[in-house]
Length: 216
Image 1: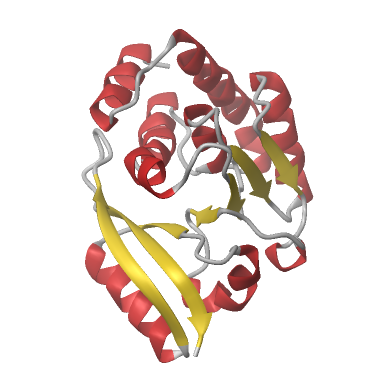
Image 2: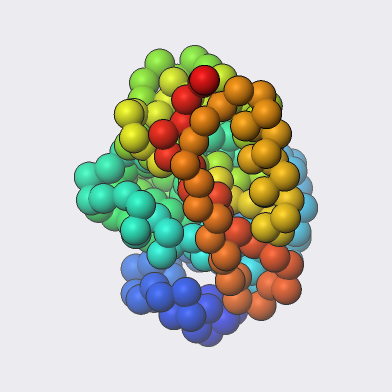
């Protein structure tokens, strides 16, 4: 892992790259590289590519989470997969708690191992489908998940009243179209689309922040 690449990139996002944080990310990356051939966790195989396309892509929303969540918040990561963004966010926000919802047992076992290996105490794994989570959260996020209009009925019960839904998305025009479909299917919400800048990644990234999601 290129530690200078990681440290300088985190600084550009507005994150102080402490030795503890860099060390945890290194351990996390080691786990991904070791298990990726068998579990197919990510498409990228090169360490620096994983850093840019997954770690930094997850970290790029740090300012949005800082603004839209509070200390002691409990935040759900739907379909956590390899732990992006939930594991990365848990490392960046030690004062918030994260629940990594992942229904595939081989991936949920991987996530549990990551939490032990990295020593993360502010995250837990829920090895279930999102519709079976049976609790609500102060915020919910997801990355590389279903279009929100396909999952809104399952997502809605996870949100406490007024809780934000923080969706990692691509180009602004694509997310606007997705939200238009959601409205067309009978959902009401307040929205903000925030441009994200991922260091060393040329692809467009945004975060859609939805509040007051409800059926009308």
